[in-house]
Length: 402
Image (cartoon, rainbow, N blue to C red; front, side):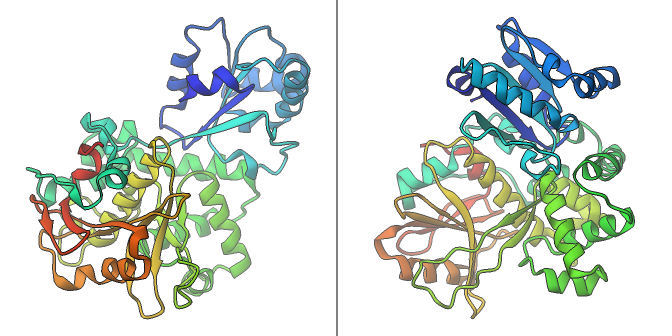
């Protein structure tokens, strides 16, 4: 994807959380080119960028600049450079915060820059799967079929591990140390690059509160009351946490005619490993009767779908659906031409009739636009539940392909 973008775009930005492999990817991409690589994490390099930004970006071929948010003043000279020489593949940038959120951003290079977001590892990347569930669902609809040998505990292990390469490689105990260090660095460094935060403890307190509300509606007034953080401050904190790729809002979906649909977004953590860490729950604790398996499993599936939508052939947008009568579907994907699939997530190995209520409601509203509905669960067999609705083992997410 990065190589394709460099072939026809002057500036390519690979944006994503820390520790997801941005630097490794860009160096591999730059390998065949006569590229200059500049790492702004190095104090001397960062100082040179700030002292002479115009001279810093001068180069005949591809220039790779790592962690561009550390020197946003480079973007102005980059814009001038690519306007004078519009040859594709001039600059390959990486960033650990959504660059449009930077306070000092002079210009977002409209029409000159393509942004590619890099996520923590997907399950397909870790398990050597095709990661094409979205394409398969829209192509085959209710004809999907999959059997799996995985059981509930196998999925909980994956949920608690998350997708950060460094965390996945570690034992459960050592993973805790990684997440502690990761969050500390993120708050102390990346968040402070975006805004002045005087009380870091409030931000950590909010993170823990959000982890306990994974998969719930994101209502700032409610969070402000529970956290004691003023509403305006809390809204700013939520924007910051989104900008450094910790949380993601899943917008509400409506047919345009369903006036009883709720328009409030849902909260998701970009990585379930971090969310479980904030709750102090490993795979064993998640599986206990009072564990957070339900919300975390939903978050896990939602973010796997979000990752797939960045590379799937079928374009689509990810939503959730909830009516004022509390009929809901965990994930809804709609294509530009209005076709829809619905996904309900169950942390158990049994699917009950009431688990199908939301999907059936969605199907009745949409008619022919409704391609199929799936209950992804921790059982091992595909089960039919009437027209256009099936229960599939959760592993189908990363094992199916069109």
